[in-house]
Length: 316
Image (cartoon, rainbow, N blue to C red; front, top):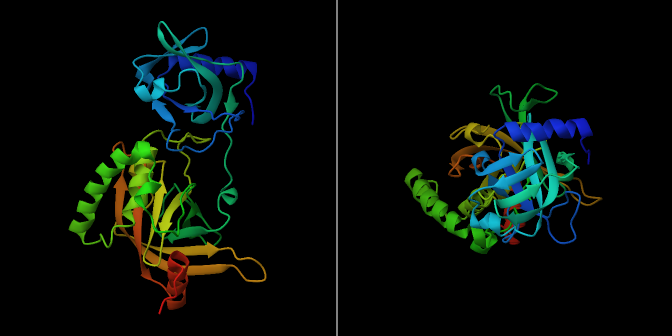
């Protein structure tokens, strides 16, 4: 954790006073400190607050005007406040108080930079890489000049288990239900609905993300795609950044490599396949998106491996 110097803090404070800077507020669970906030649960969501809903005073106080009921639930609690300063992700911790003028967040002396999460630290049991030939600035080239996108398991998702409705956080279920009705109708019209099980992680991801997007260490930086679900027929990816310009395109085909680390003495299992994007779904504000992909070529032994991993049954 890297804290700003006194001069840097003054520059940031003036930036908040002068600029229209949206912030994200997340309650800090009991026993948590120094920015170590537990992942969002059914009762804990980050809340995005628009610039027009706040005013920053010279004394270093953020006043929230006409806050939503969700924000008022944070009164008296310690919170983590995140925002961007010239595309750099910053945060501080403070207590939300209620005063006569509204809700107040006192900006403390310590403002810190948001630390990056190493990709290697998020993919312990499974990872994947998508390859394609289109030239895009948002992804990298490997040693052979191929364009590739790193993919990591989404936190809190049991990727190879059959999705069920109770996986969706209670506070997000109403929004998720609305998405599900819309997306099922779209999938049926396109003839790609199948049994529809792949849409549960889609609506969960989009509904829960709409409660408040994660602030990255650097604004606009390309992030790995998150794998939400996979079985022997499909794989589903989600992204929280640049959703309106998602790197995947509906109808396009991509090469896919999936890696399953195995305990010694077994060798790691690699699966090479191709997949086509059946559908891409967005949240209402197009801040998050999900891509549902269907395998177009896969070896029989790899199909068997995925089927048995997802169902715990032998493929006859």
